[in-house]
Length: 289
Image 1 (cartoon, rainbow, N blue to C red):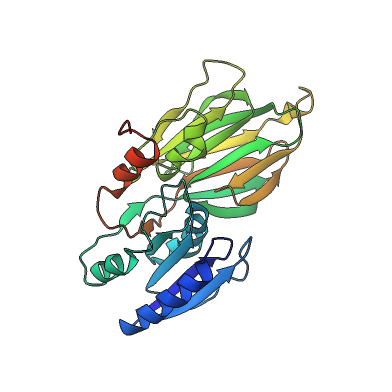
Image 2: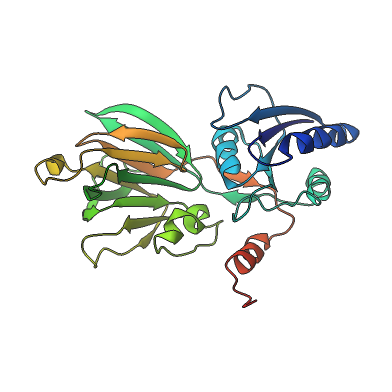
């Protein structure tokens, strides 16, 4: 068996722990390759992997998900961060969780991901995946931007869909259920069960109070267009697309950001089916303690 360890060196003791895990995995007939990074990862290693480990926080899991989801490789996320909802396996429990998964005692949690395309003059200029969210926002002091949003069926190319509306806002968050506890929650969005197949459309500080977050089935495609009259409106022209808070793309007027559900899920290995709800209770202090 082959394992890939994503090791975030900005986390205390990550390098030491990686070597300990590597030695322990060898005892269980698993050859581990260590992929370490300090800051933005580069040069993702090629190879065949049966499992991925992340040593860090939620950001490390998000990066690993974009690398491994299309390969069908499950991820065991070891928590070296603080407030997070993805890295939920403790340093003390990782071996028990791994062995239970290896012996088919754990079925990984299936998390839907989104494909994200950027079209400019009908040409694809950027393509990526997200496990948490895709955010269209702006730069500079004047934050208000104008965005047009349409929805259309995923399985009907000819269907032009329907307009949901025009938003004047600080930005727009298109979130997966997994991402519902991230930026979208901070912006007033709902919390969803992470194994749902849905999409949250959440405007950030909208000019119109009637523009509220809403949830759609992920069987639909979301099309966000940067309004052509962005300059005429006197609005900020510096518009950005941010994927999972990590990958950033510059947008221009009339660019289209097309978001739909990926054919590949992220598979997360957790110690129990209800680990997510335990994390909600503990980290959002729902227990009242």
